[in-house]
Image (tube, rainbow, N blue to C red):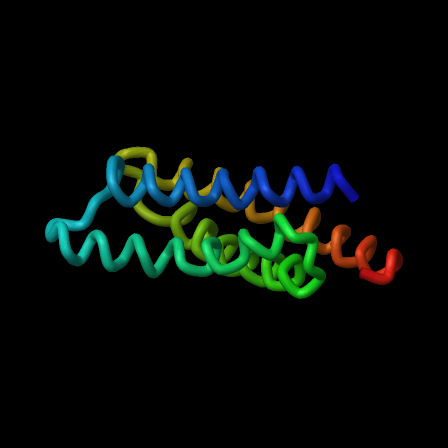
Length: 117
């Protein structure tokens, strides 16, 4: 269980970092206000799930799996998107991290249910 928890938290942190880097450094929007709002909307699902992952809550791991699927879809869209600035590579990295998150969170849910937590 500790391994799945560590992997899930690392993936959430990786997605947070990847999103911040992409939105603020690699491909920012022209307006600072729009950029900040869009960044907040992208980080909100991860920020809502992270506290429950620290507390080993089954519902939080289930929600982390669902959030990972959202980032998977975004990553696939970015992966097949424009090739300038290497945005497609960032998309495929996002796909990889989100697949690991979904798998790890799914196994964590199974382990937590078996333990009765």
